[in-house]
Length: 177
Image (tube, rainbow, N blue to C red; front, side):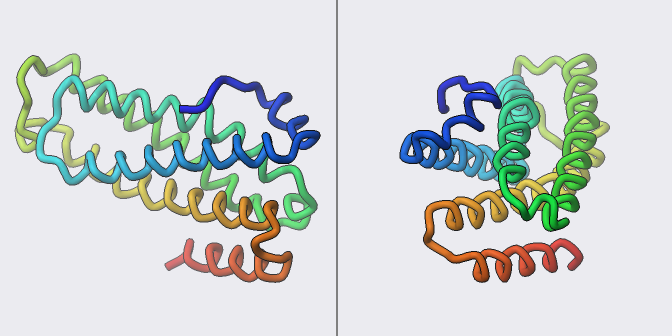
Protein backbone atom coordinates (compact mmCIF):
# COMPACT_ATOMS: atom_id res chain seq x y z
CA UNK A 1 0.00 0.00 0.00
CA UNK A 2 1.10 3.54 -0.66
CA UNK A 3 2.30 5.86 2.06
CA UNK A 4 0.07 8.34 3.80
CA UNK A 5 -0.58 11.63 2.06
CA UNK A 6 -3.23 14.26 2.65
CA UNK A 7 -5.56 15.58 -0.04
CA UNK A 8 -3.81 18.97 0.07
CA UNK A 9 -0.40 17.39 -0.52
CA UNK A 10 -1.93 15.30 -3.28
CA UNK A 11 -3.21 18.40 -5.05
CA UNK A 12 0.12 20.26 -4.79
CA UNK A 13 2.06 17.24 -6.03
CA UNK A 14 1.61 18.62 -9.57
CA UNK A 15 4.82 20.57 -8.93
CA UNK A 16 6.72 17.28 -9.26
CA UNK A 17 4.94 15.53 -12.14
CA UNK A 18 6.94 12.30 -11.96
CA UNK A 19 6.22 11.91 -8.25
CA UNK A 20 2.56 12.70 -8.90
CA UNK A 21 2.25 10.07 -11.65
CA UNK A 22 4.12 7.48 -9.58
CA UNK A 23 1.74 8.10 -6.67
CA UNK A 24 -1.32 7.91 -8.93
CA UNK A 25 -0.11 4.60 -10.36
CA UNK A 26 0.49 3.16 -6.90
CA UNK A 27 -3.00 4.13 -5.75
CA UNK A 28 -4.47 2.73 -8.97
CA UNK A 29 -2.58 -0.55 -8.47
CA UNK A 30 -3.72 -0.81 -4.84
CA UNK A 31 -7.30 -0.01 -5.80
CA UNK A 32 -7.22 -2.61 -8.60
CA UNK A 33 -5.96 -5.23 -6.14
CA UNK A 34 -8.75 -4.38 -3.71
CA UNK A 35 -11.43 -4.62 -6.42
CA UNK A 36 -10.03 -7.99 -7.52
CA UNK A 37 -10.01 -9.24 -3.92
CA UNK A 38 -13.60 -8.06 -3.44
CA UNK A 39 -14.55 -10.09 -6.50
CA UNK A 40 -12.65 -13.16 -5.24
CA UNK A 41 -14.36 -13.04 -1.85
CA UNK A 42 -17.73 -13.33 -3.57
CA UNK A 43 -16.60 -16.53 -5.29
CA UNK A 44 -15.39 -18.16 -2.05
CA UNK A 45 -17.77 -20.35 -0.08
CA UNK A 46 -16.68 -19.58 3.48
CA UNK A 47 -16.98 -16.65 5.80
CA UNK A 48 -14.69 -16.31 8.79
CA UNK A 49 -12.92 -13.70 10.89
CA UNK A 50 -10.21 -13.24 8.28
CA UNK A 51 -12.77 -12.46 5.57
CA UNK A 52 -14.54 -10.05 7.94
CA UNK A 53 -11.27 -8.26 8.69
CA UNK A 54 -10.35 -8.11 5.00
CA UNK A 55 -13.73 -6.73 3.96
CA UNK A 56 -13.75 -4.16 6.75
CA UNK A 57 -10.26 -3.04 5.79
CA UNK A 58 -11.14 -2.81 2.10
CA UNK A 59 -14.27 -0.82 2.84
CA UNK A 60 -12.29 1.63 4.96
CA UNK A 61 -9.46 1.87 2.43
CA UNK A 62 -11.79 2.68 -0.44
CA UNK A 63 -14.17 5.00 1.42
CA UNK A 64 -11.64 6.87 3.56
CA UNK A 65 -8.59 6.90 1.30
CA UNK A 66 -9.24 6.16 -2.38
CA UNK A 67 -12.54 7.98 -2.87
CA UNK A 68 -11.38 11.32 -1.39
CA UNK A 69 -8.19 11.21 -3.48
CA UNK A 70 -10.20 10.08 -6.48
CA UNK A 71 -12.52 13.09 -6.10
CA UNK A 72 -9.55 15.44 -5.84
CA UNK A 73 -7.93 13.79 -8.86
CA UNK A 74 -11.04 14.08 -11.03
CA UNK A 75 -11.81 17.59 -9.83
CA UNK A 76 -8.55 19.01 -11.13
CA UNK A 77 -9.69 19.78 -14.65
CA UNK A 78 -12.43 21.54 -16.57
CA UNK A 79 -14.36 18.34 -17.23
CA UNK A 80 -15.70 18.41 -13.70
CA UNK A 81 -17.35 21.76 -14.44
CA UNK A 82 -18.57 20.54 -17.83
CA UNK A 83 -20.76 17.89 -16.20
CA UNK A 84 -18.77 14.80 -17.21
CA UNK A 85 -18.05 13.59 -13.68
CA UNK A 86 -21.04 14.46 -11.45
CA UNK A 87 -22.85 11.22 -12.30
CA UNK A 88 -19.74 9.32 -11.28
CA UNK A 89 -19.73 11.22 -8.01
CA UNK A 90 -23.37 10.22 -7.47
CA UNK A 91 -22.32 6.61 -7.91
CA UNK A 92 -19.53 7.18 -5.41
CA UNK A 93 -22.11 8.35 -2.86
CA UNK A 94 -24.24 5.30 -3.60
CA UNK A 95 -21.22 3.01 -3.09
CA UNK A 96 -20.49 4.68 0.25
CA UNK A 97 -24.10 4.07 1.27
CA UNK A 98 -23.87 0.42 0.16
CA UNK A 99 -20.59 0.05 2.04
CA UNK A 100 -22.37 1.24 5.17
CA UNK A 101 -25.13 -1.32 4.68
CA UNK A 102 -22.58 -4.05 3.96
CA UNK A 103 -20.58 -3.21 7.08
CA UNK A 104 -23.78 -3.40 9.14
CA UNK A 105 -24.52 -6.87 7.74
CA UNK A 106 -20.94 -8.01 8.38
CA UNK A 107 -21.04 -6.69 11.95
CA UNK A 108 -24.32 -8.52 12.51
CA UNK A 109 -22.70 -11.80 11.45
CA UNK A 110 -19.82 -11.26 13.86
CA UNK A 111 -22.27 -10.62 16.70
CA UNK A 112 -24.49 -13.63 15.96
CA UNK A 113 -22.02 -16.31 14.94
CA UNK A 114 -18.94 -17.88 16.49
CA UNK A 115 -16.44 -17.44 13.71
CA UNK A 116 -13.52 -19.30 15.26
CA UNK A 117 -14.05 -21.94 12.61
CA UNK A 118 -15.00 -21.27 9.03
CA UNK A 119 -18.73 -20.95 8.64
CA UNK A 120 -20.38 -22.25 5.50
CA UNK A 121 -22.04 -19.25 3.91
CA UNK A 122 -25.38 -20.99 3.46
CA UNK A 123 -25.71 -21.15 7.25
CA UNK A 124 -25.58 -17.39 7.59
CA UNK A 125 -29.08 -15.94 7.61
CA UNK A 126 -28.26 -12.57 6.07
CA UNK A 127 -25.96 -14.02 3.41
CA UNK A 128 -28.51 -13.29 0.71
CA UNK A 129 -28.51 -9.56 1.49
CA UNK A 130 -24.69 -9.55 1.66
CA UNK A 131 -24.43 -11.21 -1.74
CA UNK A 132 -26.95 -8.73 -3.13
CA UNK A 133 -24.84 -5.83 -1.83
CA UNK A 134 -21.75 -7.38 -3.40
CA UNK A 135 -23.56 -7.61 -6.74
CA UNK A 136 -24.37 -3.90 -6.51
CA UNK A 137 -20.96 -2.75 -5.27
CA UNK A 138 -18.51 -4.67 -7.46
CA UNK A 139 -19.68 -3.23 -10.83
CA UNK A 140 -19.50 0.29 -9.37
CA UNK A 141 -15.96 -0.27 -8.10
CA UNK A 142 -15.00 -1.60 -11.53
CA UNK A 143 -16.56 1.46 -13.15
CA UNK A 144 -14.43 3.76 -11.01
CA UNK A 145 -11.40 1.68 -11.90
CA UNK A 146 -12.07 2.31 -15.61
CA UNK A 147 -12.57 6.06 -15.11
CA UNK A 148 -9.42 6.29 -13.00
CA UNK A 149 -7.40 4.40 -15.64
CA UNK A 150 -8.60 6.59 -18.51
CA UNK A 151 -7.85 9.75 -16.54
CA UNK A 152 -4.30 8.52 -15.82
CA UNK A 153 -3.79 7.88 -19.53
CA UNK A 154 -4.91 11.43 -20.31
CA UNK A 155 -2.61 13.00 -17.74
CA UNK A 156 0.37 10.96 -18.96
CA UNK A 157 -0.33 11.95 -22.56
CA UNK A 158 -1.01 8.37 -23.70
CA UNK A 159 -4.37 9.50 -25.08
CA UNK A 160 -5.45 12.95 -26.22
CA UNK A 161 -8.47 14.94 -25.08
CA UNK A 162 -10.77 13.65 -27.85
CA UNK A 163 -9.90 10.00 -27.12
CA UNK A 164 -10.42 10.69 -23.41
CA UNK A 165 -13.88 12.11 -24.07
CA UNK A 166 -14.72 9.16 -26.33
CA UNK A 167 -13.69 6.63 -23.67
CA UNK A 168 -15.52 8.54 -20.94
CA UNK A 169 -18.69 8.48 -23.04
CA UNK A 170 -18.27 4.71 -23.53
CA UNK A 171 -17.85 4.23 -19.79
CA UNK A 172 -20.81 6.53 -19.13
CA UNK A 173 -22.99 4.60 -21.59
CA UNK A 174 -22.01 1.29 -19.97
CA UNK A 175 -23.47 2.56 -16.69
CA UNK A 176 -27.01 2.20 -18.00
CA UNK A 177 -26.83 -1.31 -19.43
